[in-house]
Image 1 (spheres, rainbow, N blue to C red):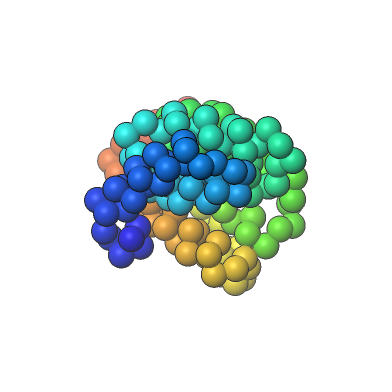
Image 2: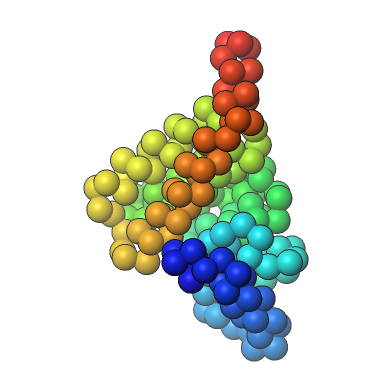
Length: 171
């Protein structure tokens, strides 16, 4: 739904999954729902609920993918600094994992939200280089393409250009 541009249907599906998760939760299901419902911004009315579930997921034997999911939940809840920390933690946990471009994209999104488009562009560039090496499975590449599109749109805004200009004047 997210890739097909059926945003409202995607958001309805996320709201239902999140509601259902409150009744039938296990760590595997939590991971799927958090990952699915953080693909696009504003997928659920209360992103703090995604954070709460993602924090439960990470409290038990966390994988890099679980930590990444928490980073995405933080990002969608407007907690960009915490998101950047989690993406970096996930990258540090498995610096050579095939889908590490997802951490790079997460860091780029966090930096654009923190008003640092120069850093966001650097992380995006690294992610694109990794994606061009055909790393990761089909699902990771699909998620990567969704996040990449979002980033490219955010980096084309006048605000990003203004922040870049301000950053260059300070250097």
